[in-house]
Length: 112
Image (cartoon, rainbow, N blue to C red; front, side):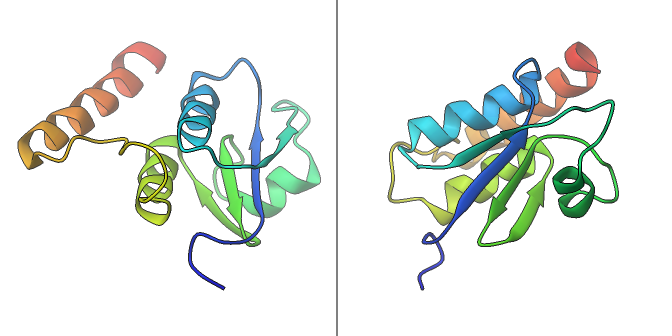
């Protein structure tokens, strides 16, 4: 089985901007995935199993292996499914660094 093949699931909540950014990229890449809405107050079995350290959404589960944290998930999607849809990050290395800078800045200063 190739790296980009197999089952794809997303644990999230509809109101989370972190989950929304992952859903946008999954859809931009045209990837089929199963979505599981999570109660972030009464954490369910799936969330505790696949993100036992932070116990937060989003969690992308690819072939039963979890990837946590939205920016890490976006990079994972972009690398595994590079042949699907446009790249999430610019090809120019400086522009790519700036995009990462602003993504972290927004996470730290806007969504905190």
